[in-house]
Length: 103
Image (cartoon, rainbow, N blue to C red):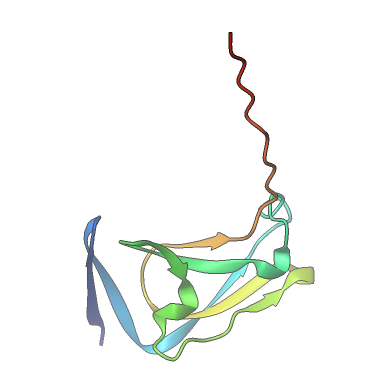
């Protein structure tokens, strides 16, 4: 049996189905998928909410851990709701100065 979790936000009303038991999600990715990620150990699964993105492990009331197997390019997370999910990681940032010329 599914229970509706209704979350209202700026994007309108999104309906997420809460699972009776947690579900383990395993994602296989390639090096090309994470070529811009600066720290693969910080790779994480996120869920889209009306307020923005949040870590997918927060969909479970008690939380859970993410298992990362970097050598095999596998990430495993436990979720308790349906929804839109994406894999995110930190990227290299380069700041360039802004130069104005007056006159």
